[in-house]
Length: 101
Image (tube, rainbow, N blue to C red; front, side, top):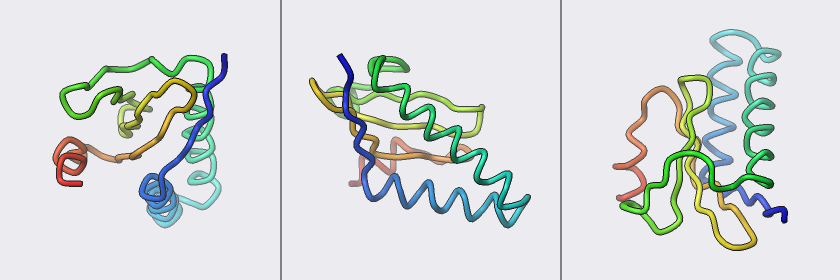
């Protein structure tokens, strides 16, 4: 069975910000390739949503996966959908950020 992937407005804003950062630091082409790779990783959660590290201490069903050593993707798995709640770059303290919300 395939889960729907739902990206929160906050996660989309983080992805957009990551694109802007990389586009300025490197190039728009590199930023687009990096963001497309993140989107491919999100799409892979459709068929195997329970990958990564379970973090039920933060929220029931909450999980994280690392991406290319610099990004943490935070998501919640439910029966028919996976909700992407954050895309954190460069060692951001996602635990503190998510606990404050």
